[in-house]
Image 1 (cartoon, rainbow, N blue to C red):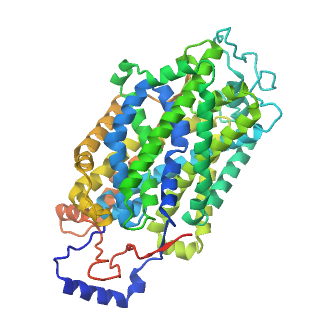
Image 2: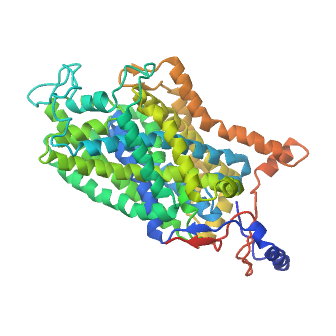
Image 3: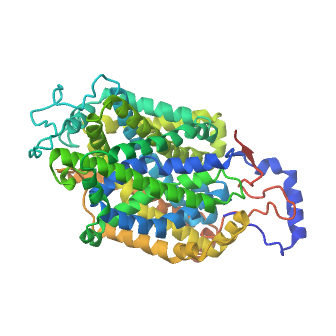
Length: 595
């Protein structure tokens, strides 16, 4: 990592170095890296990611899957022990190095450069199937403009004899499905009986997927200059709509049933590892920890930005929004339980399509249901795009940081790089919209996002807190903010966070259960593919560590290891008036402000 030379060192030598460097500045200085135009743009980017699909789609789904209130306790414990400290740490190294995850980690500890690469791999994998959720939202959005929303009745051509319209005077028959369930599974997905029955392409969804990637491309084609402006709409407007839906959901019959399920924990479930592992997965997904997003966002900050305030703001907004979304989701589920005359836990199977079944069912019974549906899916579309912007920007920024010369030679314009990333991600997303696509989607989400992330987060905090050092990181933070981090942060970085992460990782392996979709169990070959998907990120760390050690100078293994854990570059910029950076990284002055 870059660090400043202490003032008491030989300043004459330093000035001499700077004079030599000034003569050949053009060789060493990289193209200018842009700033955020103002602090609001940075905060909106962070908040937009945290209040994206992570909160509105994943949080209710995992909370329902983990027993409601039993999920909230580990959620807030892990937020305080891992979430807040790691967010602060990632913002620090991103802002200090002015690099994305690969560049930042390669500078602070080359041995763990693979952790940065792993975060980019996970972000790429997530971008392929997160776009599918946006495609579903686009499909529902346009369908909502029909005279009557098609998921309100059982009189459509895709409905079967097992379709049942909820009536609170009658209990839901065994094996029956509501119109919203059948619309999602039989019309939208046209799902097959299993992953082994792929079927053909769902061309309507393919068109929606292309539309989703077109929106992402034109939001990112000018880097943060374009995406920052788009976020003024996609981040602020959904907050207003979330509050509107909160008020509406609390007035529904049976809302209290869902709220009791949400806030009343089943203490026995806390003895199981699954709620804890799911809570950790949700924290990392919603805040963007170990995915590289926050490191990337912070790399566009001014050097003296006080990111402690940003950490507190993002964490509070994330937690409050999670609770608000949880309240209106479970109030809606309570209403459905009332309509179906069933317990809340039996309302619907815990599947990734939970929100595409729960909300449409409640909306269908509202006055002016088309208007409510349009507003809801527009909100969902904005939130999905916020998440997608962030994870695609991680991939683009990392490619630019890692291969600047090749990008300048082969892809002269930034727009071409973004187009290439979007096109490749689109192609990899197509398998998710065939008839067995939902099974592929579930497999990807289980292995790419949930299973790998605690492992990656552990090695990230080890690389920064143990190898680079809490003391050195604290001095860097003081250089930027004027204050050293509190004992809370230093204790968590050094002991509490890695201890909890390794415990969660071991627990997830000991209590490993194969993925499933409702009653469907994946065949062994599909699980093997899932582990291959997980290994794409898991193996980055050990494989790249071996490569770094092998290439390191030294006569024996010990010397090579010592060299591999040493910060890779030294920057003396800003000391004694020297304005030229003698390393490969940018200085605070080596940036331009976007407008």
